[in-house]
Length: 486
Image (cartoon, rainbow, N blue to C red; front, side, top):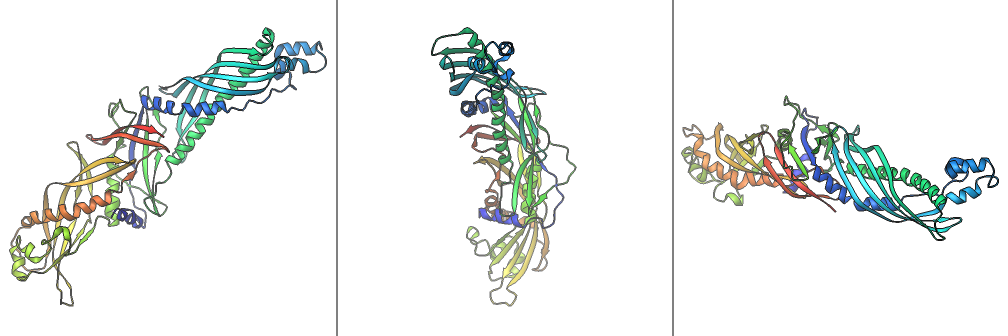
């Protein structure tokens, strides 16, 4: 049954319809960034451990020996060229043996973006041409500003806008003892080598994260011809408490984007909404849910044919069962005959938020046909009745999918559209109990089976939602949750 929803989407909108995009607001709180930083600690250590540090060049005065080298060599004190000076101040075959990040913190800076502060401890070895094996311990701090923006395709992208490497402490040990002059020169060389590559390493990590963002916004197919992707509508906004992103849920059918045009104002999430103690808060607009139900209605997925043999409606699908409520039917068909039924949702469902509930107004019409076993016209129209149903939608999240189920609220509103068994003085309300049984035993379970396939939510590889809680607010549905990185 779940495959029905997948299949029905394949037939949507042979020609593009005019519809508005649906909005989702995502707020990532400070503790979400704190957790994200910690999950990346090991990866950062790995990247820093594998930094490529080339051997120093000795063919350039500035890179070889700095001020001392230039003075000495211009006076030709140590002979032609830079050979001896280069040997004195340069370290070769540099290897990083151990990297540790005792501090890794992210702070949200309004108008700037995430500010990252890292303390890094290095254990490095190298070979000095004169003094032999050399061991170096370095403590560095890297201060980085990161800008969060959007690509032309609507993907999130991160970029380093400012990076300041600070070499705080350095301990150098030679195998043949200490030489202060050489240590002073080597410190300058190491500062230059590490400083440049620390910022390059941070940028390389962000490039990998950007690739994950690209994956997270790729299409999530419901079927071969239907897909869904989430795109940024605007550049994310960073406050001191959270980063906010406004997403568009974009459906594509046969490579055509499905849109919804209406006069609603741009959806926003109130500043104090959501749970500040969770890592992430999401807000779903009314249009988000409207489009889901429009997809089902326009495709015919919410239409149902109920045969007289339907097990869940045993003893209900006959003229005698209907005649118990409408006497004229019993008069027209004194001998019980089976009845088939067709429920067609011809009108667009209307979604509203009322009293902390998500309400969906369904208005299908129900056609009933008497089955005549021995007649050339096997199916004889009995009646058509318009039904107004108010459904309460319950929301839950499972495997990073938003799942919906509906239940009947209040009484059905019934109106005869056509009658084929003669004059009828009975009121359609006499069928209320009967139609409620049909809805609760057959129609709503069918709709819920279709909806149970779920809608994929925006996420990243290896990220799982933890303890998602959904609440219906005045004008939107709010979801709060933590995340786990695996």
